Image 1: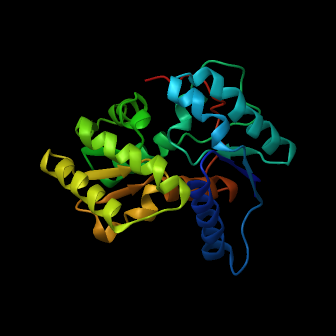
Image 2 (image 1 turned 135 degrees about the vertical axis):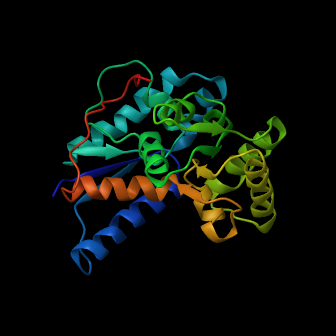
Length: 242
């Protein structure tokens, strides 16, 4: 068994990742059992001015501090259930104190193994418009699709005004479903829910497309490493080769 660390950036997604990790243990190891897991969270509010300024380099040390605290607690690797945070984790800087699984690599590999060919990307504006998912999907022979600009703005607003604050409304769900339907019309055969709160709003049964739940996929991948089913990761932050 390996001690897993969860680098939390937004509370709702991190809580879902933690719960899913533990539940996987219950299923695999028996009642009340799971590998050791530690969660560390520095309030996202400390990073928001830098996110709004596009200053990823200033966010990296905040995230690195969480990784250091996870290492001090005994964790042997980390996961970060926040897709946008990976933009900062990929910034140049000293190696992180622990190796980590990369959420987009986990999601893209699952998409490849499942047989999808064009994946819609639904998350924050930073993630939808950023390079990470197109790169990770393309590396596996898959295409990425994103919503139209006005749809991206609406999706992003709901994430920061509602979802990260634990607010999940029927109106928001209806809007997201309409955006996913448009992705389907534009040729996507799956949608990646790559803000880790979106799976709480859009369960598989309401989505017009099969979903790739980045939160639960990452948690299950973390469990597989912690339980010894998969090797420890090697990435310690910084740029990822295409």
